[in-house]
Length: 329
Image 1 (tube, one colour):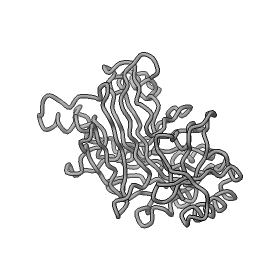
Image 2: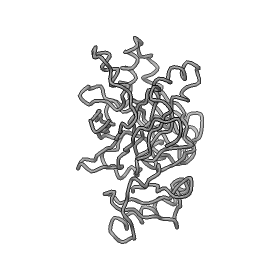
Image 3: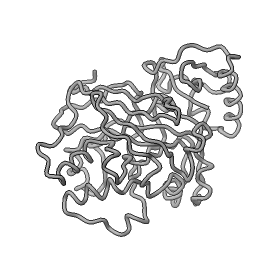
Image 4: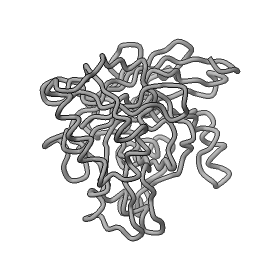
């Protein structure tokens, strides 16, 4: 099934079911008012939501047009946001550009940080930054939302705890990264609010594209209407979501509603393009191209989407414009 959250007068919005073709939606307050509420008792709520979803697609349920401009993030705030860097071709390129090799442990021990999740942006909410000189960048990723994950969950058990799959734009302020990391406590000021795709879907909606803890479809990233890249999410992903979930569950339980990202999707094949400007600039640097592609500027538009095998959008598009201002838009 496909789920979204519409903006209303509350912090957590209104949960809606969305038709498979993303044209219609229907609220289900008798089952769950919000996505977090549904996740709290997913084993009980999911089958009831699925029945309503089938009725919606069959035209047996009242509905209204679905407009992504009315969407909040499916989870407008999450108890936890964990982001990995599972596509090591991206990590390898960035390190090579600064003359550093790949530590051998990177191939067996996932890179991951814990980010802020008190505010997650809707798919058409602006990317805001107080100054373009901070180096505004997109990062197109795949993400999952989990149910409760017990301490010590193994990779072979982890995928049973994946409730939903969707997309993320993990915005990064590149010129603040070095100062953040130099303090030894990880990302903070360099990571403003991330945006989520309008719709997150249950794994069964993905069919054969979802296997091995990976989503085997191209993820398309555009800047100002120009294709930046379309690397395949199932290619060159060193650690699947089964491994990423098990990695963090090694020392803690994960609460229902944990959002976990893949890191920037990246393929070794240069023909696939890229999903962030940082990798594009690194490739240009290694190829001796100058000047480098600039970071995002005021008014630039970012679009992130994924199509199924028939060319239909799976999650709806993240479609954001950059707003540079010392105050909120």
